[in-house]
Image (cartoon, rainbow, N blue to C red; front, side, top):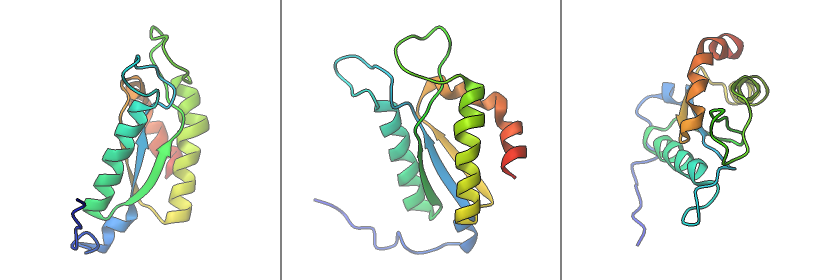
Length: 128
């Protein structure tokens, strides 16, 4: 049975609509026979979407590309600098311009994306 949240449309503050939420997972990482190849993306998407439901922030969607540590060889990934410059920053710029955003929350569901944190200052400069 589905439980409806009648209060989910209530806005606590209109400022929350200036915040976007973007999921970052990995669509192409093998997790063995028990889990689908896009497990990390599904987890990140669920958390980001649920957060947007509960807060009213704008759900931007999911970044399709991901990065990974060099020593991990069980998926298809981009290098961190390519991911940031060619995928993440353009996606954030489009979301900012089209959705009138002032801030974005990145929801990471893939451990290989952790190196992105080293690019946060650069992302902030180029996004803003």
